[in-house]
Image (tube, rainbow, N blue to C red):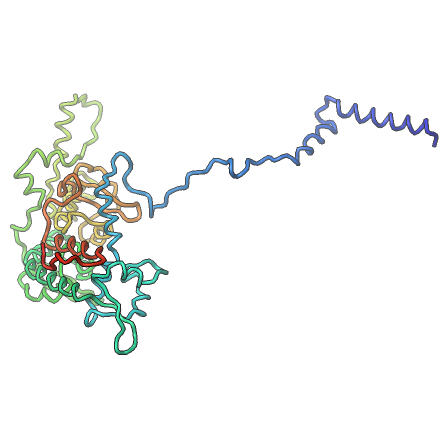
Length: 403
């Protein structure tokens, strides 16, 4: 092939390529080439420049309250519960053991019963409260845990408080039974919630002294149930009704049960307020038979709100976790909409904590800084115990019997 022919062939090829590249035809080879030729470009935003998506909160951490409604004092009370969870649960569990002692090897397996995080060593939790718990080697060569001598003195003081307050605790159980649908509650439910009301651990044995008030019945499945023997009308007066006698206007403003009405009524603001007032005051007694009320009426909701108000007023700290309330759901004719019902009454109740485990406070029972107005002797004892529990060294001026 001659050199001239070779040059002509090359020139023709270059010309052909040039036409192809400059062709306006969108279906041309260049369009395809252009689409494929961008494969070497970075089409994704580098990770360091991407906008971080806000991580969705889980029910375990998401607060039930939102700003600006959050009350830090009530929220801190629940944080305090978490801080002393190990102390509270271990104190109860250890107190029921023979001689108030437990093998350390056994304690390490009881994370749920003793309230320390699963997978952690129980020793670390014990060392947080050196004035309350001690670890020692027994004559059998095994390591054991128990109360310090100082804590044993505190427990003796607590026993005295339980004895002094026994008649009050008996009345609390009577009122709970009087509020219940059939005037009977399984013994286990009262026992599970005994700390909420200051009821002693051995209250099941103490019931035998009060045959005029209680009767324990064993059902076919072996479940033991406490039944009310005598109705006492002097006890069937709620805290809300007593408050109404003292300050009627205050109670009227505590709750809202607005009624929906048609526009055809053409009510002005004053008349509408008067109409709503008829549906405001929840004076449906919690000691009446709520099972006879139509479940979704305003009257039934008044009953349930009043019942929870009375339930909380019977507790030591005028507050309760949802699991405490739900355990009595059947006996107190409550519904699954308890959360929504209480949320509609922000003047009286404050819902604190997370969606997984929230608590209800009676707001009027506390001053602005979150301190209880009236403290039960058991509450005062618990506060003193918590102070000692956080001490590493006991100060010489501290007296175990100080109040």
